[in-house]
Amino acid sequence: MATTRTFKVWRGDAKGGDFKQYDIQVDDGMVVLDVLHRIQAQQAQDLALRWNCKAGKCGSCSMEINGKPKLACMTRMNSLPEGETVTVQPLKTFPVMKDLVTDVSWNYAQNKRIPKFKPRPRDPDGKYRMYQEDVDRVQEFRKCIECFLCQDVCHVLRDRDGREQNTFVGPRFMIRVASLEMHPLDTADRIPAVKDEFGSGMCNITKCCSEVCPEHIHITDNGIIPLKERVVDRFYDPVAMLWRKIFGDKRA
Ligand code: SF4
Ligand code: F3S
Ligand code: FES
Image (cartoon, rainbow, N blue to C red; front, side):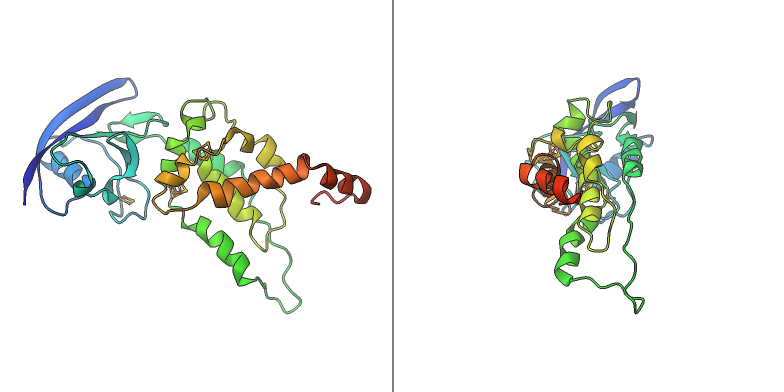
């Protein structure tokens, strides 16, 4: 059944802006992205927003809906409180370009800081061999669609200057590091950088990132905490430190 709903959509650019109200017909089965497209078609042709797949797979329609980081294409209208105004605004952690579009290029710059995959030599028969359980472990991290909702919600990037000062790469890139560090073929050592450059100590395990991830990646439990443990083992475990001193094995 069609109903009229009130939307408050943030309109503006880098210089500033405000919420603008739109009363719009909503049909059964619509998601927030459908409603924004209808607003665009009928009332605000110049409304700027990003989208591509409409299937929760491209990660481009990230925004804040009723104050929560979400994908607009995966947020069903019937999941929002009936009869209440729906507020839609751009991701708060990143600079606004126009309306609902933010500049997320900072994230791509973080990605470039991470040392790339460095595989060990092939076996004598020219093949690579891996245990299935080792492959399964990193497979979860490969589901990331780079929507940056986790980056948006993380308070270290949002409120604590982690982004401006490049002190923390953020949850998305901690799981990228984890996917490389736990890869059964990889030989690069990123643990010193995890501690000193990527800011593992800045994360205080609030787990907000894991809660908003549309791919349900266990960012904190399976990615960040194991990386923190590797840092502790390497730099703060006295037994491991003594072992390294005696045997000179930096990865003990
Ligand atoms: Fe999005 Fe999840 Fe990837 Fe973060 S980890 S960018 S929330 S898919
Ligand atoms: Fe941020 Fe997630 Fe850690 S929200 S503080 S990266 S647990
Ligand atoms: Fe691709 Fe929403 S449009 S994730």
